[in-house]
Length: 231
Image (tube, rainbow, N blue to C red):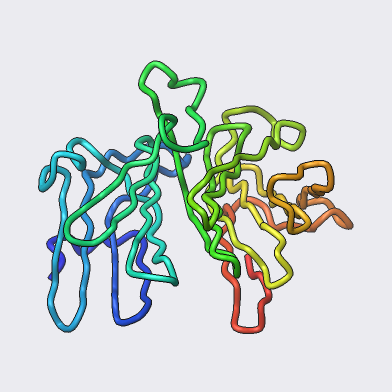
């Protein structure tokens, strides 16, 4: 079984349980916990660590685990190292600026620091990804494998805004959590990912009538069985 009891995120589909340690600091920065990934299937455990494969060397702070509903591929968000995709047979691909639309954190550009938080598949199998500490706060890996990012500069206090959760509602709205700001962005691409002219965004905040978001506790979102978003 897992060598670490502190599992930060997990996902389960089609008889596969995937989990990972990792996490972030109290300010949503790095905790520098070396990568540990665990997989349980048919009663058998398998694990991967920072040095078990060359592509995993020096990776840390896994924040999210998301299984592709079409197959057994798994996506892992990481705080600083972009995103990992597991493709079976001990094979991983790492996404960064060379093969995706993910954006580098400007304040740590020297280190090519790319932060990805939670990710979520919509009904069309597009994977929506929180790209933290970037004005291009939301990225999507489309079902055909191509990428696109969305600029929310007008809704953020700075490029250093922490972005963590993303959820896609049954209506197709993307809810994006800004936990340090006690705010949520609700984004509607109108079902046309590549046409930004019909996009809409609103920002829910703590003020009455503008969201009434509770303050001082951060934000964690989940979607219940009725399709309602809880935070």
